Structures are given as structure tokens and as C-alpha cells.
Image (tube, rainbow, N blue to C red):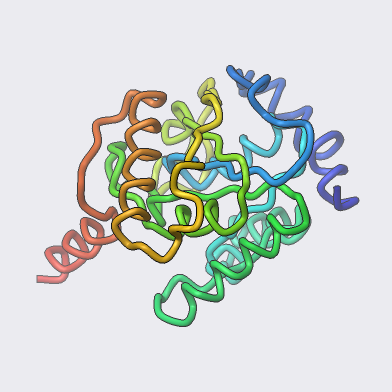
Length: 232
């Protein structure tokens, strides 16, 4: 556990978050005590990557979008401080070779027997619904043999809704589902139909845990259409 991670978790931020937001967690007994683990989570808010690590004993490494390390103002400073301090890995989400680099970075974390946090949707939900997952998570779990845990973040979007700068006082929660078994697909990481099937199964489980309506399109497509309409 990085020293700054320990300091943030137990001294600087953790006690404040637990006192003010009173976060709750269900299913933490499903987390293995050792070995590589993929935390596959829905993504409602920027603060998902703050609450989840603070509520889980083992250190979680997230593949955080590079923008979290380049922001400006108070929020940008806090983002850089937090994500750098807790050992998160910045990734370029532009696609192509950048996607392969992100996959390799994730596999590197898992090869060390560590815990990796992934948002299969690839971006925050634009409206609170759960969107189609990217298949990179399926490749990672098949290539690494890691345990996969579905994670539902509850009401974090009410703490910091998209577009707001300052957090609101809301009680939030984390639901950790039982490990998902995909051993029947061992050695099939090159089959795109298998990767899609695994990813869809994970998203279905996330929908059950979170209670979110599932939409079978990519969240990024919805955001792009909204941005395009706003420019007209």
C-alpha cells in the first residue's frame, strides 16, 4: 500500500468521509484476501473512485482517465493529488493503440497479484442508467485468471452530479456481489463473441445489484450525440 494512500485512507480523507457521508458496504466478505482481483463497477460519479477504495481493505488500483491528472482549479488539484497519491494509473482513452496500452497496464497490475478497479462502461453514465460494457474487461480476466467481483455504487451521483463542482451531503453505499466464474471460457480470449458474452453477463449482474435500467448502447455514444445536438 503506497504511503500516501495509507495517509489519505486513514488520516486525511477516510475519517472525514466516514463521519460526514456515513457510507455503507455490503458483501465485503466476497473479497479474496489474496491474489489478483478485478473490481467491475458501475460508474455514476467522479467520487466512485474515492468511496470504493476507502471502504475496501485491500489497495485498489484504477485505470484512471488521463484527464484526472491534468485538470485545473481546486477540483483539478484535488484530482491530481488523490489519484497520483493512491497509485492510480493514467490511461489514454482515445482508442486504437491507446486501448491496447490500457489493457497491458491492467494486466501488469493483475500479474503482481493486486486489485484492479475497472468501469466496464468506459465513462460515467450520463443519466443514471447502466450502459453497454467494453470488452477489454473480458480479455483481462481471461488472460490474467483474476477473480471478478461485480460492484454496485449506490447514490454517488447524488453526492457529485455531473457538471457540479462541490459535493453534496448524501449517504452512499457499495454492494459487492459474489465472484463470477468464467472458467468455461478459458483459452478463448481471442474470440470476440466470447468476450462480448462475458461482458454482457457482467453488465447484467451490475444491473441486478445496482437496480439501474440497462441500455444496450455505449454511454460514450449517448454523450457524443448530446454534445452534437447542443452545438446545433
